[in-house]
Every structure is written in C-alpha cells, then in structure tokens.
Length: 387
Image 1: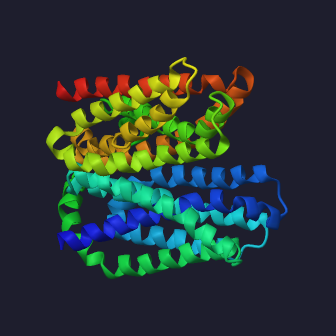
Image 2: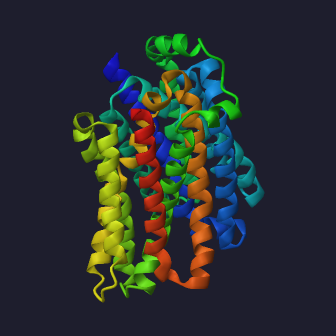
C-alpha cells in the first residue's frame, strides 16, 4: 500500500510539472496563430498565477472537508479539462477563460500534495517529490517540440499533455481508498480544531519568517532562471547558444540537487539541510557576482546556485508540520504556496523593469539580496522553534 500510494503521488507531481513549460515552449507559434502580440503570454500566465494563489489560500478548508485524495483527483481533472480546452482554443480570450480552471486546479493540488507528504513521509520523499516536478517541467517542452516539428500544431502539444492528465485522473479516482487510511489519523487530529482565521494564521509564531523566506526564495529562483541567459550575453559576453545551455543547467541543477538531497536529508535533518542548501546557493551567487573578466566563475556559479537551491523549497515545506503543528500545517502550507506564486509571478518582471533603468549588471546583486532574505528569516525561524 505504501509503495503504490507513493508511486501515485510521484506521478501526480510529474503531472503537476507537465503543463508549466508548455506555454513558454509553444508561445512563439501560438501568438502568431492567435493574432496577438508576443507580450500577451504574460496575460495568460498572470491569470493562471492569480487563480493558483486563490486556490492555495482555500486549500485548508477544501482538504479538511474532502481529504487530500479527493482534492488531488478533482484538481488534476480540472487542469486536464482546461488543457484539453487549450487544445481546441481558436481565440486568445478562450485561453484567458481556460486559464481560470487551470490555475485553480494547479494551486489546490500543489498545496494538498505538499501537506500530505509533509505529514506522512520523510524529508527524502519531499525532495524527490519536487525533483519529479522538475522532470515533468523538463518533459513538456519536448512534447511541444515534437508536435511542432512533426507539423501537428501547438494544439496537439496541449492535447497530448491533456490526455496524460486524464489518464492520471482516472488512476487517482480508482485509488482513492489508498489515501483514506493515511488520512484518517490526520483528519482526526485536524477535527480537534477549527480552520484558522487569517489573523490567527498570521499570528502563529514564526509564520511571518517562513512566508518571507518562501517569497524571497521563489523570487530569487524564478529571476535567476528567467534572466540568466540575458545577463550572460549582455554583461559577460557569452555567446547566446552557450548562455541558453547554462540557463537550462540552472534548472537541471535544481532537479539534481533535490535528487541528491533525498539521499542525505533524513540523516542531516531539515534545519541542517536548509542551511547546507542556502550556503551552497549563496556561494554560487557570489561566484556570479565576482568582478572578473572571465565568464567561467559566473557560469559555474549559476550551476552551483541551482544545486544549492534544490533542497530549499521542499525542506521549508517538509518542516512546516513540525514548526506549526499537524493541525495547522495545511493552512500554513496553503499560504506558503500563495507567497511562492506571488514571488515567482511579480518579482522577475519587476527586476526586468529595474534592470532597464540600472542595467543587467545588477542581476547578481538582486539574487544576493533575496538569497540573504532566505537565510536570515529561516535562521530566526530555527531559533524560534528551538525555544
């Protein structure tokens, strides 16, 4: 039962990553076919992010009422139907409309699965779970590329991923009994308390620190990935092809970092794992920042930053039940997810506007500031929870 359920959870997280890269991979063709400017991709992604934030904030009440298994199954079904809708959309406004259920489904399943694993599985499982997301996010551009290079059209890329999501939905509904046994203890524990009000939630000791750290990390990660190639080309005089490869290596570094962290996380413990990851991440950022003529330190630093970044996100989530109690963990993780999406949605474009005024050379300084905003509040959180 343990192995079967865990395999399903891993598949669900691969599924969660699958759609995330589709619009980026297909947009050069999509915007032409839909007769809209290239910048309109941001409208779709903003709608998805806004609805993801909403469903993350509602995840505590949904999971208390229906259980993580049902929330996951219905959420994956919702995203599957949205993706199939994308596969037949002929006008831009239809993409905007379909982005609403897509975002709502993605946020709910993300928060529900993260809390379920944090409650029931060790730290290594959480790291490997988020490595599965990276696998899904890496697969989807190849799916879109296959559809485009074989003259199937961008609609087929969405259709393929949508069908995969439908198959997973069927599997999730068929295996709901596997979730119930593990959920019974958590439900009994959660039933002793009512859902927290927003004032009570933000009043929990350490919540402000963990939300700042989560926001800062996600802002740093997304900004690092989005602007890496531009920084390497414009500031470090790296060729566009090499810059693109090293930008991709940053995300590969995150995935590899999570896979490796899973091997040692249970022995080190969450706090030490978080310190190790943050230290390696900051070391990578310092290498990018070094004022030397050679681009090699910056290239190496980007990869090292990715490796260190790997365990940070899953470790913060995994220690949430320990820091705030199992009864409150779903509510806290839901808000953590919301702050994560705020960081990833708004900070990269804000950096773009700032870089237009002060230059792309500020890229590693921005990363360092937000890297320190991960280190300082997590260390304060560690002291608060130790006392």
